[in-house]
Amino acid sequence: MEENVHSKVLLLEIKKALEGIDYGSLEVIVQNGVVTQITVRNITKTSLSVHKRPLIRNSDVTQNIR
Image (cartoon, rainbow, N blue to C red; front, side):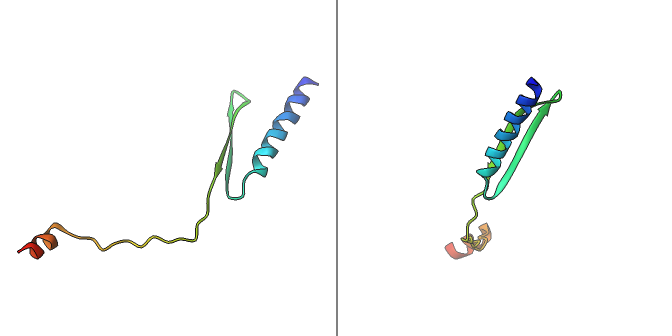
């Protein structure tokens, strides 16, 4: 019976962790048959894009100085 209670508590913890994720992942760590850790990774989506600047080489800088 005690194992059944632990299983229910664990499932509730996993459910609670899942409810907090819009984008991301949930990782359950098991060691020797026992869940030891629940890791939640949240991802923040963005609509912004970052444009790369043109690459400036040392030779380009040297030519502009002369």
